[in-house]
Amino acid sequence: MNLSKIKRKYRCASFAIWDGDLGYSSIEKNKKLLHSRAVIVGLNASAKIKPFENFHKKHRGGRDAWLREAFGESVIRGAYMTDIIQNDFSVRESEVDLSNSNITRNVERFRNELQDVKAKSPFIVVIGKKAYDILVANFTTYSIYKIPHYAKLGITKKKFMSSVKKVLNRYRNQNN
Image 1 (cartoon, rainbow, N blue to C red):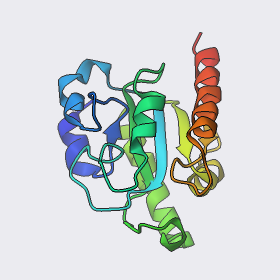
Image 2 (cartoon, rainbow, N blue to C red):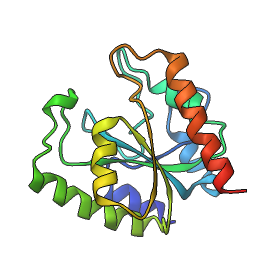
Image 3 (cartoon, rainbow, N blue to C red):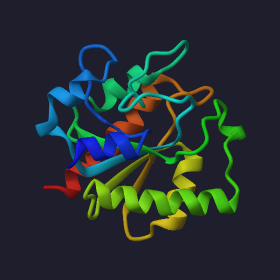
Image 4 (tube, helix red, strand yellow):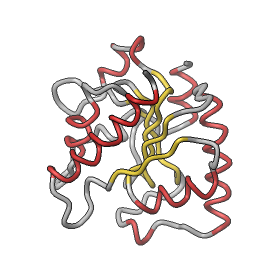
């Protein structure tokens, strides 16, 4: 996997690997653990970010630490992480441009991204319903599993972790 190319080409890209905090320096230090057998996909980055900061940024009220806790030491540790919509940095999900033309453009970009990270038939974990709906409508040959968004109104850490655990068990069962 060419980290320099990913860093340059996909600003929303990251990997499911963290240091003790939410920092992203562990990505560069642990290149051997990075893979695309599993891909974790969100809807959009809610801010313009530096390379590999997505899903690793500390921000007020954020629950990104739940991702670290859920995936950091799991069977998919080191998995590729990205967003399906990469040209919209809306903070609110309801404001993300989900027009047919924007979805089509981003789906094609995502197909190229999967090729670039050499994800041949990845196990895809999707964060949130809107991102899930886009992926299942456009990627019918992949194994796609939904978990709730960690910032969803009313979601508890216990419910979130339980959903992730179920998906990780499916991954384990498929890869034994």
